[in-house]
Image 1: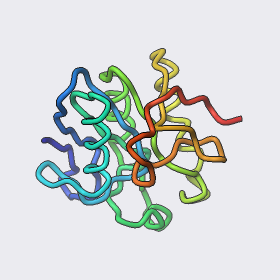
Image 2: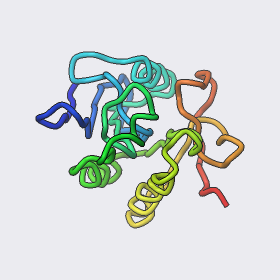
Image 3: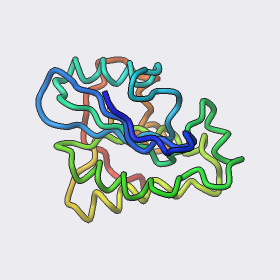
Image 4: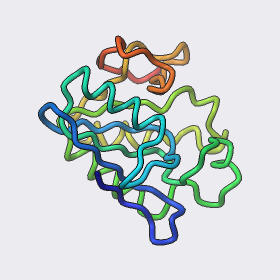
Length: 163
């Protein structure tokens, strides 16, 4: 279990957990909460459950925003919710994975001025020729659902960009 957290503790750029399967699965969500190198939060426990069910090896978690916050509304109140090193880490996470699962949930929960941020992930994956997956079918808005709200029967499937 490892994590890359900024020296000030404000940002978490990367979180890794070992699974029982093969290969590396990257999961890109909205923003990190309380999980760190030693402790899982509810979302990470849920991801590990998906990993056990679907045979994932290492799970590497990245986020659209690196700001550690338990409430997504905090993103809109912070001057730099992305974090100075987040784009670099997203490229490394996506480029180093066997499969990439996107799971940021509906954009309506994100600050209005940052609702374009998901395109950073799609642009990086597209430039590397990496298809993106979601857990189960996307939400009505076309964006991938967050794992916290899903049953374990929601298998990874190809995610197509919303129209």
